[in-house]
Amino acid sequence: MPTNNVPMVAGTMQTDPRSGGVKRSSGVTVDESVKEAWAQVRDDKNSEVDWILIGYDGNSKTDMTLISKGKGGLETVSRQLQDGVPMFGGARLSTGRFVHFVHIDDNVPAMKKGRTLMYKNGVFNVLEGCDGEIEMSPGLTEATMGSVR
Image (cartoon, rainbow, N blue to C red):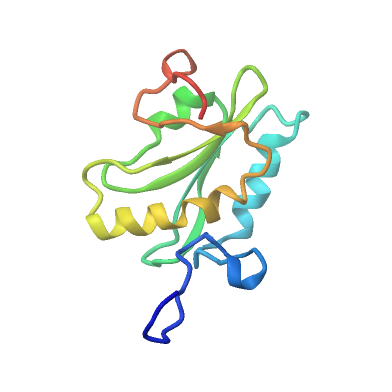
């Protein structure tokens, strides 16, 4: 308990025990287009979309939007990653499982890396039904992805 009578504030996306277990917001806003595209990925009858990429909306520091979507699995989505641009995404695997990821390469500025990691749970909460997270990198395929965390 703080001795200086200053209340403690729980960190981003932590459960605050003083609020009865209510999770605090990370401050990220995810555009409705992301939810709609993710529903397409999750739709068993839709064979045209099996991955999505999510990124910052223009110069915004808090708004995420759909960057692209398509067909071709991890191999195709991994070719869409941009150097120096942090991205989130999700995909349907050939096994029918769903995974999500965040990609932050070494050329992303430090402040943007930190902000992106802070928003990770907020974005992943929109990608409902995922079996886990994978480590995304350019050129990744299902055969080379390793295990799902």
